[in-house]
Length: 307
Image (cartoon, one colour):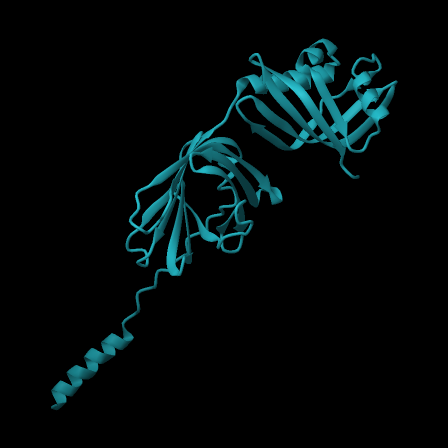
């Protein structure tokens, strides 16, 4: 390299070394989505139509169908929920439950399933909701074979949801669906109206409405009370000096079947009796039965909540 070449080389390299560097664009991590309310839409009672492939990954195309009821309720202040499914079909009776737990650090849910037939929790499927669709995966064994499991939750609208389970024996290259459930929300305007009438009649001490809502064979059970206390509790409704203030229900429960239902929760009561103000928190469960198209109270169980 001659002198002129060395000079040109030095100038070129120097210009590259001294050229100001373009400022790097800082990449901000995408904010992690908080998914602890992903299942809030599902809390309540649902009518379930279930199809199950009897022999997955065998080439079989024999499906069995069930009709049943699914009840979903919050636990751990909404950071978990419990699903209970009871169904019947030509293949027999089925009972199962799923405990769903939210991991606030991973921002993911684990779905832990158990059937009454085994009494043990399966390997949890782990995942999250994206764009309104839940996807959950795990690896487990089917017989002696290691397989992948995928569980999808696909809400169609506020009152309809689809659930699909699929297996893969080739590392996720292909999937065979073996479980499809369509849940439709159970609503009964007649029951909701009866519950409202009951609440209003209690606060007004409206014994006429209460008499219409209570069935002739109505039973009150209170594990904290004597027989005399139970009789007195019923008699109180007919006393002028007894008045229940509007009350608050926490942890509400509502399960509805074709001709029966259970409602209740933790009730914070305030009432006046013989001029004295009293209050108490109780856990209450009402059993309703539809008779001649009308909902009536047939059974109430009351338990005092420890203070």
